[in-house]
Image (cartoon, rainbow, N blue to C red):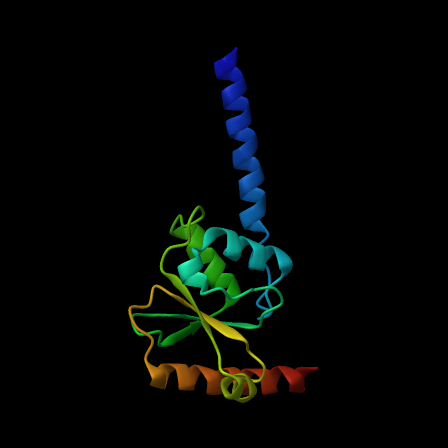
Length: 142
């Protein structure tokens, strides 16, 4: 009987977990939802987060060995689930933008680098310029 109860709780916990991860990255809106922010804060180490609160943050996601490629929020969360990084997110680091970078980027607060060995400053500057252009284009669409 104890074994059956254990299996029951195991399957319930799996279904609850899958519902949680399936609710992340549903849109490519760069502002993290409350669920996305909580998930990242729970599944990233303090060292990775650098003490940054992720609630309502506008985020750029980058990947590549030197952080040279921008990716969408939905792609980031898809990569996490595909690489089975659902317990502890490995290879992701959060970097806070300076006030000047925030202004130049169109209001982005942070960027999350995923599986990047180093973050090259020229890539960082290029991403900020790209974010600003993207932000301007989305304002024109409204």
